[in-house]
Length: 89
Figure 1: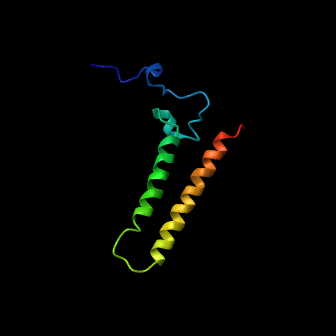
Figure 2: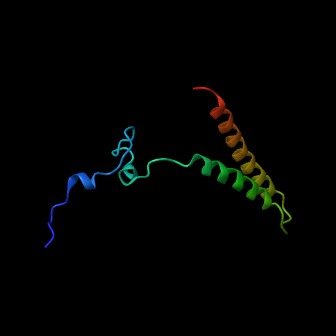
Figure 3: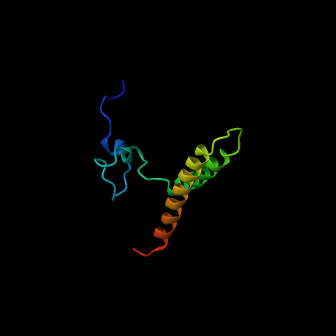
């Protein structure tokens, strides 16, 4: 019969030295980061997607104003992020 005790050296999670598992619980199972390139891509994609929504059979322009406003705000945030990433810290 196999032993019921586990070897503690085998079960210790692989955690980066700068990540505290109390603050980032997912670091204990190997993922503790964000995906900034994916988030930026999705931001540009959905800003364009909102503008595509303007094509349609609606007659009112209120919807268009909201779509352009939200897409413009998203583009503003994305451009601001690009500028901030280029500045030295």
